[in-house]
Amino acid sequence: MASEFWIFGYGSLVWRPAFAHSEAIPGFVRGWARRFWQGSVDHRGVPESPGRVVTLVPDASEPPCWGMAYRVESSAREQVLANLDHREVGGFDRLELEVHFRDAKRSPVRGLVYVASQRNPNFLGPAPVEEIAEQVRRSHGPSGPNSEYVLRLAGWLRAVGAVDDHVFQVADQLCEGEPERCEGGPETR
Image 1 (cartoon, rainbow, N blue to C red):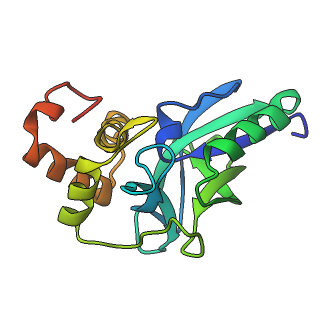
Image 2 (image 1 turned 180 degrees about the vertical axis):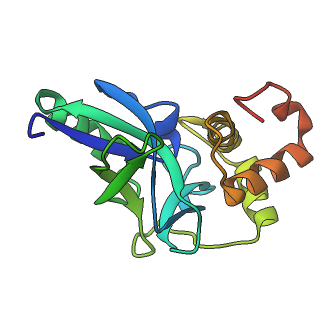
């Protein structure tokens, strides 16, 4: 439909879209894996101590990557894109992917997704889960502690019944080191 477009969020957008939308539905993309491989020097860390946030990397062997699909009216499109371009300025590029929904009767849609590739200067790449968790544990930026980002994402995934071993391993590692952070119910654990 020409009067709408879709945005697919798989990180902080699942719990804090902060933009006008007319519909929000859990959905998934295929052929991509969510990884804490992107450095955050503007939201969950600072230049001298970057945090880690998720990006998508191509990986057809992974299960579907769950997130939230937002339908945005055409009248709000330019403002929403301007806000998201500012929010995702730290190395993310726009990509259009096919987004599927749990309800098989609902047709897939093309959704705009922000993905950070290894070509950007903030890309950190893979690391052992323990190292990722330690970096997250010590990072804090203008949007808050990096650990909050990880635990809220893990909580959202668990709440919708999605499986993401990488996110859960990092969250579990954080909880192992500081269990008091994880006693708040589904938002954190």
